[in-house]
Each structure stands twice: as C-alpha cells, then as structure tokens.
Length: 391
Image 1 (cartoon, rainbow, N blue to C red):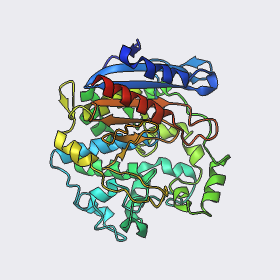
Image 2 (cartoon, rainbow, N blue to C red):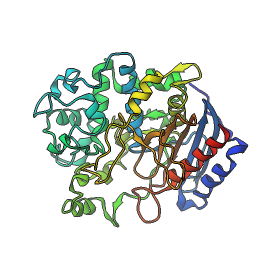
Image 3 (cartoon, helix red, strand yellow):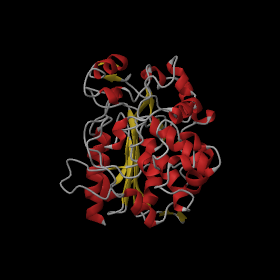
C-alpha cells in the first residue's frame, strides 16, 4: 500500500490557489475538504483544511463520499478494456450483456450508454418496496436490464444520475470477467498508487469517511417533497433519477457495502488527482500507462451537446465524462474533462496544460442549497490559469 503523505505540499507558484481553498473552510459549519493538483505528472498541491465532523479536524487520510464524481472513475476503468481491444464503443451493449437485449434495447450501443443515451435514467419505481432495496446493486442492475428505455433517448441525452454507475459496473464485469471492485483495484488503484478509489469501502477504512452534511433537500423542501414538486413540472425526469427515500439511503451506513458508482464513490482528492493526472499526461503516470493517448483523444471528443431531457440544459458529453468549462475564467480550458458530483466535489484532467485536480468535501453545497455551488469551478479556473502561466 502506498504511504499517505502526512505533510501538506504547496508549490510556491500555486500559493494563491491554496489561499482560495483555505477561505472555503474558515468556520466549523463550513465543514472540510481536500485539494490535490498534479502538473505534468508531479504533485504540486496536496492540502486539506476544516472539519471532518464536529470537533474533529480533517486529516491527511480523511476521505469523503463524492457522488457523481465516481462516474468518471468507473468510465476510466471501462476504457481500460476498450484500450486493449476487448470492447467496441459502437457495438451493442447486449453483445457483452445478453440480458440487456429486451424491451427495445437490443441496438443501444456502448457509446450511447456512455453518453447517457440509453434511456434508463429512471430509478423511481424501478424496484418495489422500501428504499433499502436499492442497496442491492445486483437487483438494481437486473431491473435496469429488463426495463424499457425512455423514447427520448433517440433524440438526445437524458442524464442517468444513479443508473449510469450500475450500467458501467455491469459492463466492466461482463468484459473484464471479475468483480467491478476487484478490477478497479488491479487495473487502476494499486498500479497508480491511488488506493482510495472506493465504491465498496473496506470496513477497516470507514472511520476515515467524513460524513456529508447537511441533509439533502430540494429548493428548501425535503428531498421527497422537492421530488413531488418537480414531478409536476418540466423537471419530472430529474425527479425520477433517484428512488423514493433517497435522502435516507445516502446516509445509511450500509451504502458502503454496495457498488453504486453513480452515487456512492468514496475518494481522497489525492487518489482522484493521480488518476486524472495520468489522463492529463499522455495517459501515463510514474511509469504506468493507464490509457494510450489515442484512446484519451477518442473518449474525450464531444459526442453530444443538445438539451438534455433530464437536466434541461446542454451537457458537452464525452464518453463517460463531461467537458469542464470553468467560469469565471476568461480562457476556458476546452480540453479539460472529468466529472463533478452533487454537493461540490469533483475531479478533472486538462491535457492542454498537463494539469489534473481533485477536490472532495463533506459540506454539500453552499448556504442556500446542498445540491451544488461554484467552489470547484472557482478552484479549477484559478488552477488552470496558474498552470497556463507556468507551463
């Protein structure tokens, strides 16, 4: 196991970035977080601040659940098999997963699945019974394989908020011939020295998880109240992406026994930045070739940029990642790609500058809503501008 650094690292050229990061966690109710930046394969920032839980400071080995940030990790694992010629993006998903070829899904391709065009965004009502049934990832995956797709998938993307992770994990298992978490360990985590890329968190490591807060709400309402309200608007599809009882589900300790890569990834900023650091550095880090440069070019090419029927705005989807236009930067890093998560965490690579960034926090969103805020966008824009100056 890689030794976890106990001292913080700050390249003097990135002092202003660290100062901006520190400002985010001045008070106990700001929670805490960690930020790591790699440049041309070298760590230049590795810092943490704030509180992991009331009365307990964030430590060098603290980790946090980062929600949709995990979609980029799961996608990278799948691309390892395409990189070796074991997966064709334009082949039907059913070629690798025969049970998927029902209810009109026999022609849905891997490329379409990775760009949220499988029409399987809906988890609400997918399984009968209490929300805890969704902790059974095998049952959720089987139900998705049997489900009929939303017809809008033929026209545009429809963000698969949680289901994306189940679909990718099952495809990884079918192609890789082993458990998803085992393949993640052997293909990415161990060879890259990025062990803290967890979906099923080892019991021995769970005391390191900084609990997320506050409780999830929507527009000041409970999650369920907000979902019911959204269900009567043009955002009805967005309400369907989570099961009933979702707010209780994500605070249930049993969540860490499951493999739900669309929502329950637990990471350190350091591990995220290392994985994306390879992708920003021609696919290689410390002698390990994660992906070939031509594969990176293929998976980051924009596939879709039409109004998403779930999110109701345009998302620049690559194959499992989204583009990262970071306001308020005047020089947007259009080559940057990665994935942000509900609440504010996220990570990305920018091959243009050779930079990667990982950010995790337990404080979900800002003062008005836990759903998200501009913290990562601000940090990313500043880091990008500094990287351009020193590259």
